Image 1 (tube, rainbow, N blue to C red):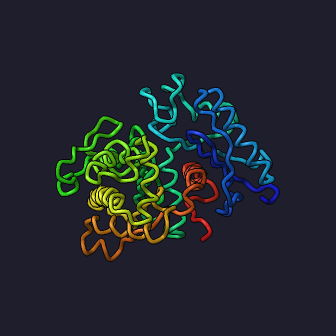
Image 2 (image 1 turned 135 degrees about the vertical axis):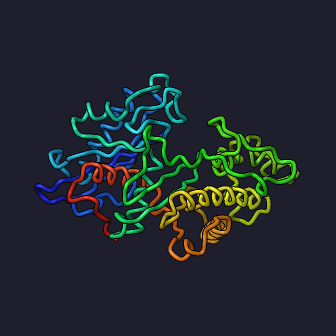
Image 3 (image 1 turned 180 degrees about the horizontal axis):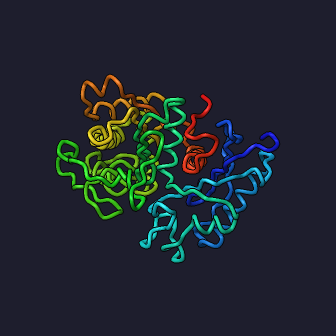
Length: 350
């Protein structure tokens, strides 16, 4: 429980089905050590989603015994695309299907509802920031990192000197939508993959669950006739089962994940020449996989990341820690850093 008079920051991670919340104390400690989820209600529209976020805020205060007067800021993250100030794209977004979300200022609406400063980040940036501080500790404020998080899409984040790089329109670090070289990656007769964003051959079109469903699995099922996944009846359902087959050493699944690893390595090779980070983070479903498969996948990503000898001596590869809680925790850290609270920047307890 926080001491009387101590200041805290609340972190709220908004998702397609649930919100997760945490509290960051002035000593750098998180007062919640588990998922604290509530329904996000985003499919019902902005009015209900803001009400749900307000409820998540009130619940985390109650669970941690934190008085409202102690809260000096709120860190909020949502899936993208959204502007740097938390305005949902006018084209809509995967999780924000209700028409009223288009161009909606979710940050401003939550700030008005709670009467407290709200600092916004997309969920990829928030998770990247948490991984950066958790891994680097006291060196976080003087170090850089790049994170790739493989999920329904390919989330990413770039951190330099302890700060998320957001860019003029908030679109910096969208590494999933960088076109990558496809030579040597695609198998004979495999069509160039198309992303939901409309680009052909970007990283997300390969290294994501959507990429498996739309591009990789349909091709590889033609090369493995009679495969069990062909009997599932739905590519969407079958795509979610591929990881389990990979963990079991299934040849077709390993071909799919081999292509994903190569795609991720090529993105990180570009990052090596652009930001030259201290740490390359990988997160997503593969982090939660059986250890032998997870390590195999990470090794493949390393193999396909082209680093100079000088970079190999100083850079490291790591997994995003506490992935389910990384969004809320990173959102809280971002609010602390942006507002310069408690002498920020500061590290987290290791």
